[in-house]
Length: 92
Image (tube, rainbow, N blue to C red; front, side, top):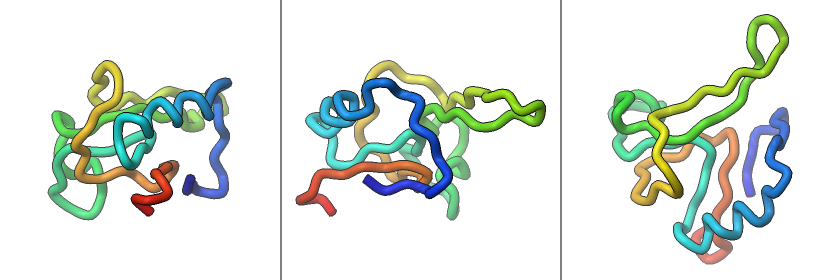
């Protein structure tokens, strides 16, 4: 697993969820894109972004940011944001 040093894990079942995802794909992350068009994952456009992430709101609460929600695990991503990612040992 790789992540920024200032994240918090909100999932009560991260280990099981990561194991399930890594059974399906080589690399997982919380947000990414199926198409690249610049240095940031979202530059490819809204139709190509996937995932969700919670972040601090201006009022101190936590807000959920959802990028083009799709059910289940999205394979074939061209990029994964570095805020949090995990990979199979042989892939790394």
